[in-house]
Length: 372
Image (cartoon, rainbow, N blue to C red; front, side, top):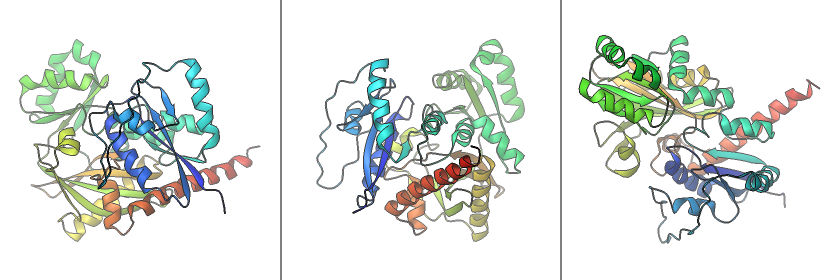
């Protein structure tokens, strides 16, 4: 019997989306075909320590805000592990080469900075290990909202009005920034960290007096801050799959249980609705799917991405909101649900993503042979 392909699933990480990553990793590891693949769980603590061996997922879950999702009849037994406060050189020397030498491909399930932004992708490139998802450039571009928006606009994709600034600029010229908000789009508006996801650190600002607190909240997560106009819109999402010839799923719609689709509405409150397929016209669906592929190509994405849109109610315009290169893989996440509704099961989706990672690595290896 042929040896199974060893898939290292990396989760956790030094990000505000650490807890969401654990749920996504749990779902991915359950979906991996055990006849073809062997799972190697690799955890990263909030402080940056790599955990290999034992049960890293349950060790990290012991300190998580979001409990792991249990299957019927399953009893949660969280390993009561005391995690070290920091990553020292001795532990790195022991753990990092061990997993790097023994896995055939890596499936990063790291949402947010220090994992989704090209850092881990760069490490894997240096180690010459195939990995699922976007490369260094696309990962970094997608994570930085201002850079992604500029590329979307340059590619002819419509986006909402926005501007970005640093915390230091706000401290130096708060009145000028507040006046710019009033001048360019007014209230309500959204204040966001430039580099984060899962709506962490995002605030809907209804009046000028709320702006300073919202900026301070965003600054907790990033030195660069984005302010966007608030649009009276429905929220659409499209999943994209592939390398150089990506395909788009059917379109889904998010109906948040709260004023907007914030962290609580996504992961804590179960009253938000996922409408699959979205109740929109065939023409609107084709437009969204075409724009999703265009956004994917605009940042030179690979493997997977979820593209989020606004469908403006007064005008019917469809605007690109953002692209997520490691979308959620939880039981309620849109990325796998949209592919399931498009005819690709969760298990087949995970298998296809691993295959795409291996294909991309093989193509690069063949090209590299011509350099030497």
